[in-house]
Every structure is written in structure tokens, then in C-alpha cells.
Length: 71
Picture 1 (cartoon, rainbow, N blue to C red):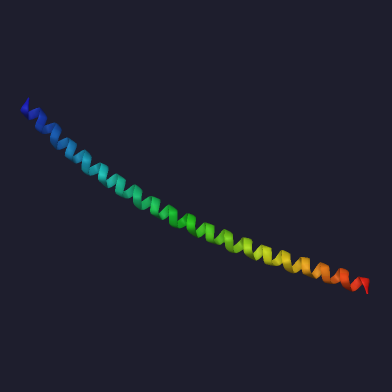
Picture 2 (cartoon, rainbow, N blue to C red; picture 1 turned 180 degrees about the vertical axis):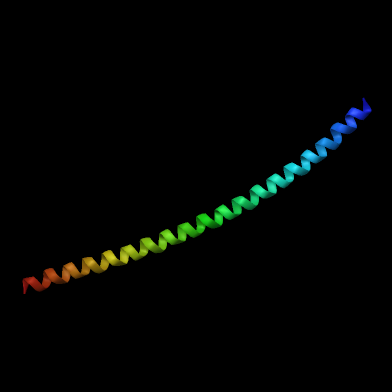
């Protein structure tokens, strides 16, 4: 029986080590995903601001055209 417990004990150690490796690899993957998400969010915000600027310029041009037609 002692021999069986020793075997289980060593297996648990290996399982613990494997679990730590798995958790570490998951953490690295999560960090990479966070970086990807951050990059995607930054790109989205840049694009959104660019589109707002374009819309403001179009709106201002329409306003100027409307004012010029009135005179």
C-alpha cells in the first residue's frame, strides 16, 4: 500500500507541474490576446476619429456652400 501511495504522490507532483505549465501558457496567451485587443481598440479609435474629422469637414463644406448660395 505504501508503494501505491508513493506512486500516487509522484503522479500528483507531475500533474501539479503540468498544471502550472498549463496555467503559465494560458497567462501568456491571455496577455497576447490583451495586446491584440488593445491594438485593435487603438486602431478602431484612430479610424473613428478620422471618420469624425472627415464628417466635420464635409459638414462645414456643405454649410459654406449653403451660405454662399444665399448671397
